[in-house]
Length: 151
Image (cartoon, rainbow, N blue to C red; front, side, top):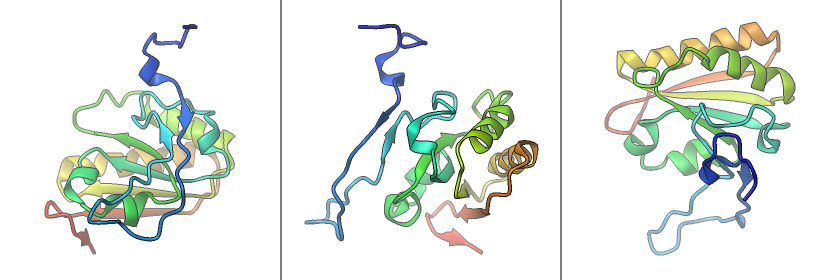
């Protein structure tokens, strides 16, 4: 196997093709994930799934707290997940600014948890957007610890 940069085959960028679905069959909700990797540290800034994309930048916990996250937030979007409390976020603003500036991004949605430490992810995305110099529509969504959208 060739050199994959970090040496981990699971870090290789790939697009995941999924058939269009309209509903979950027998209670099994289909995944809306369209690419790999998803962790912000691992996503290549020039990965093809970011080109002309709507992007969801999501706090790690959102996918576990919000049962309908795939259907309500992820469907049709490229994904990058991060935890502003536990990750080494020192490079996140630069990386996000690079992603925003080289990919003709259509929109950015930031989904965070209602807990105070999660606000840092929203702040980083806003800083990165400003640093990129791009004019991209940005929406922030806050999810409660019970999985509901907060106002």
